Length: 160
Image (cartoon, rainbow, N blue to C red; front, side, top):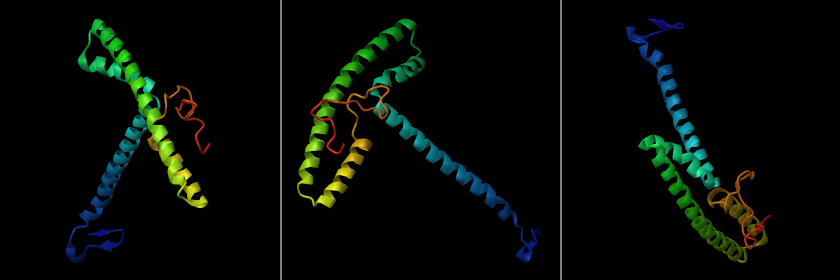
């Protein structure tokens, strides 16, 4: 048996050569699926993180469908979720304000121990950390990055 001019040694089959593309395609599909799923999950988390005011609108249809709520139940659940979510947002904003104050204090304190070149690098690192990992203060719908102007004591940012 031959494949493209190659002959099997010892009269064996080259079936395994036919399986290689199938295995590669299957593995590639798995990798693409995992990476795509991870990217999508991250996008959803970032969206919820940047726009917490939209959470009730996103979860209420799922709750209604999953629990099979009657119209009366759906109306009561919606009122409860929206009321409690507003309270949770107030608590979150208060905690975030204090968290950012500590972050800025840390940044300023560390900066005093650094050389000017290190301070520039530290400032860039802090900016990246804030943008990627610290929640925005009271995200404003429609703002480009979902961040609000925040309390005057915290804005403008030290590196702006």
